[in-house]
Length: 443
Image (cartoon, helix red, strand yellow):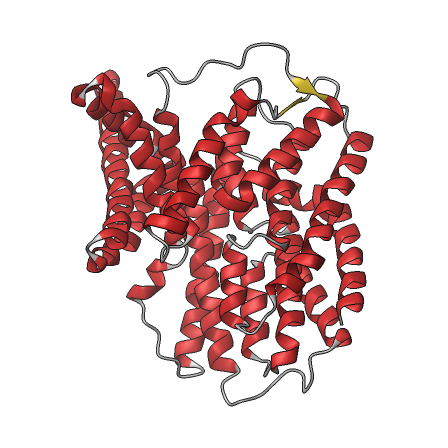
């Protein structure tokens, strides 16, 4: 009887995982359909992803389940306060759409694992690049490719390193800092898109001239600090050899081809969402439709449910963001402005406030959005605001336990967001000092 019960339980779990995988796949397909030819289909993306998360909720590790539940609960609570205390009109179904574009991109990126044989890519051959040189390769590879491929680069590089051995703290920090510092200057980052929307009169050339040197300083700080704190003798780094760069460079070239040629109206995140799975499936087609269908079925039933940590954290963090932004909009309505003039002192205080809010768990997008909503920027102040916002984003996402990069590392590789925050506090302090100095120079 106990054996029958165990078999029935296992069958039920398998069915639940299969339904969850299909729901997640449906969320991805509806997002792609919305981008391509059927805009109304995208309304299904949020509900489908949330359905997959609900089905997989019992399988989340207790720590992830507690954190995700807390995020969602606070988000709903803030929405209720905005609705019943401040009289805000809350579009409740639309609240399910927060972060769904990023989640759909993550699901699309997972299909890169289908490039190779059924058992996955082999372990890298030859001796690894270790020490400071390996660390430099990891930071530089993620930084340069991440300026175009955004968060997907972390998975490409991180998964390659993880084939040798579980990622160490120093490797995770290199991935974190390499990507987050690209927000200081990359025109393809989500941060830049949001900042351009909030400050359309910004001068990108000025931002680039101040942000790029700061990004180089971030790499230099990493190369000086981490070898002093960790023994990197046997820690593998990402090789900048052509063979290692082949797949990321090909994907970057395809993304740029679509962005500047075929689909110039779509964002980089949107292009990655459909390009990654499309390329992966196309790479399997020479083996035949039956082979390709089998790979897709295996991926849907195994790999997509295994993404439950990443998907749940992003969706619940998005719900928190929706609650905070809705409450902030409702509470600040009426034309009140935080500063009559946005100069050097105001810029420094704003930057530090956003970074501190990131340390306590708020995504920098919340601080940037709230700041923009309580400012009345003159045309001459928009470039300074843009630099403050991008710098706060770069530093805040590196140290914030609920930033996109740290949520991804937590969901993908099992590292604690609190650990990443603590390990990056010194780095964030150094970078914040440099940013404050650059603000004084710019202002």
